[in-house]
Image 1: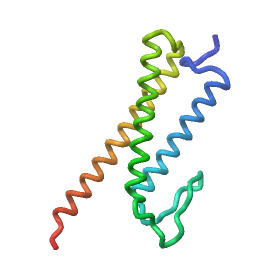
Image 2 (image 1 turned 90 degrees about the horizontal axis):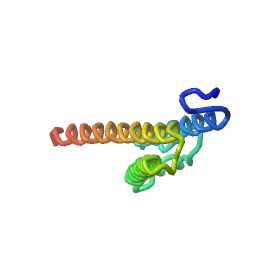
Image 3 (image 1 turned 45 degrees about the horizontal axis):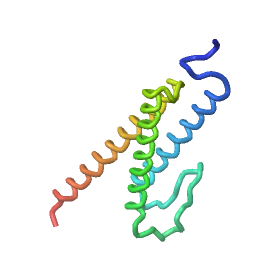
Length: 128
């Protein structure tokens, strides 16, 4: 058996590349949340808002889509874990990758939440 850590051949490479792309996409989304006034997205994709025109619900929709994405990743990880427990899924590497991806997504969401809370507290401390 020539597999390394349960990932073998081109299929394993495709999984790794898919996870890499998901991480890049999430990173770009987090950069949008960090700097919404620019209205631009990285070169890897996405639609840039026209200069000077920022959608009214840009931040809200970006945050909601990010949370929906995290929820979907966690649901997928939970489904794979349950499938493995029932014996339906036999690829433990796939289950572990999904669980790690869910953990990273949750940690990123937690960090964004902490930054938003810190920014809110800083704004509330400002004098008028």
